Length: 120
Image 1 (tube, one colour):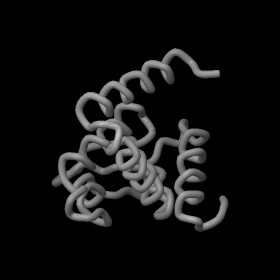
Image 2: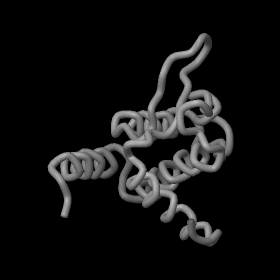
Image 3: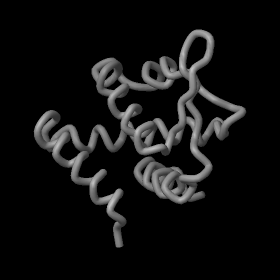
Image 4: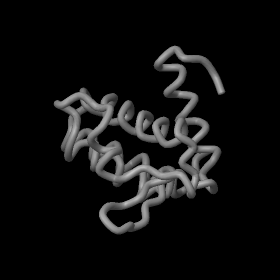
């Protein structure tokens, strides 16, 4: 059963993806979302460890995906509080939110299943 916040997020995302991106890019956005969370999880970025905002959006993605698209997906993860970002001297530092551990685990499981890597 979904909470009110989850329903609103799902509605917002579905409207955005259908109107602006189209259904064909919805899966790509989900893949980028899973990849961003996996990168932080793999490198154990839970506060003390972190990645720079610009490195997360540029590295590890094909050239046709990089840029504004990945930035939008990362911004939606920050708005959903799955990823926390704080300013540093030259960039923003991004790390996973410990309070959203259940959501992060489900995203990681989807990523591992899609890649055929295994389980947690």
